[in-house]
Image 1 (cartoon, rainbow, N blue to C red):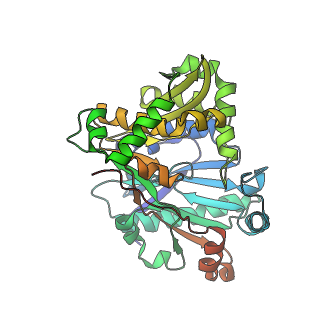
Image 2: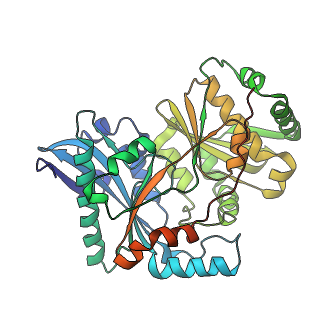
Length: 382
């Protein structure tokens, strides 16, 4: 451990050092404006802290921690009602309900920390490990024992930094991959993208666009988001509750607060049928990447109009037109995302359970609680 490295845990964005955003500049999800969203409108069962790592008193890394109390959830998801789900939920509630993430459980990708170029990444990880131990003590003093500490979402290259003594007891795991769409730098418009598709997937594109007849897509501004808040939330909740597993639900004002804080860097698109809002999707501008955020839709309209697929095509068109390098489509719906050209990127996490015996059994337990997702990767380009 490098003795010149230290950390400070902040409970409010008002406490952050002046140069926080300068250090976090590479990732909008560690900027103070985004952290203010978490401060004002995080899920009810989530507590966030912000960690500054210092070298001889100079800020050299910024990090986010999220503590999740899964016992506060009414439901983990309604889709899989079977004995296995009941058993899984029992195990979660009794042995894994208090989870501390170094990272962002609401996103996919390396949004845990940003490290200055000149900093020692290993020393930063060692310091963040110390910070996680301090956070465990803080929560214990509040009567909440942390069951599991997880450092989440690192690609193959970044995961190698964890091959140090401090993480030897951690179980390295991967779940569903992050689906990332690389924008071909030669594409100038959506027409170029369509031309790059093989006949089968060009036909899929044409069929989806034809099905969407009558749907009007509109960029929605803050006043419209506020005016439609109840409908937006019901559309979001429909999708969220039908996911196989949830660790949180967004509060009703989340999208409003997001737009207030990030302004033009947060894009909210509404999909209307006969002037009625039937779906929406959201994007976050993050440097030369677009990150997809939450969406919602009326399921009957989604099936009839192929709404979700059309949303993916719309995001691709926007990324091409605005010259972004990639779209982070995140997890879930792997096959349909691959059918539009997204590629799977394996992401790793590192978890440690407070009980030694459970920790040793983690490879077995995790394999049961998080079964492999079977899906067929599509290859839509020539």
